[in-house]
Length: 241
Image (cartoon, rainbow, N blue to C red; front, side, top):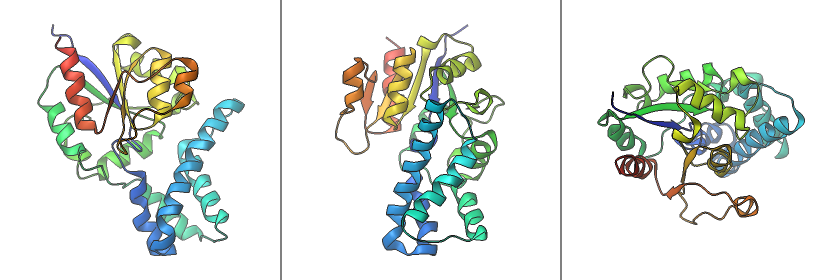
């Protein structure tokens, strides 16, 4: 049997652009505020997951996303009706993919040696809906089979808790050091490496790896590239050595 290479793709911020929610925010608050609100919404969403992990408590990613939206809006002295809150939460399940994702997944589809998953903090419902509503993600065969959408919801903890990466390996049926995590989130790329997996960090801005926590704990991503398509190509290159 041919050995397969396991890749877990982070969803939010890696395959899907959380900044794309600015379009819907702009309809409610104007384009001038939309981008900043989108950034703060994402900031508090992640911050809440880290705080929850540190306190040993858990709320679903859906509830955390909703609370983070309320925080971002209130911080600007704005208000949001229940109807508009629901509209934005629905829109969050329809985020746009980054430009290179279609070609990246095309490469995955052409390589039977790759065993790929979506690996996300999102709830099962959020991730499933996001994939189904995405024109790019819904038409690929990469994630169409049962068990290809792996979330942390059953663990009641979030990335970068080491247990989440072990969960990915367990679901894929391999040892953790055989797993590649592809993420544009530094905490995720670093968390995967710290737990014992391989990781590719997507550096879309082009500043290089400047995360000083990695320096403190002497851990860095295995590979740094500028796009998910490059990540897939590099993983393939290394797997064929």
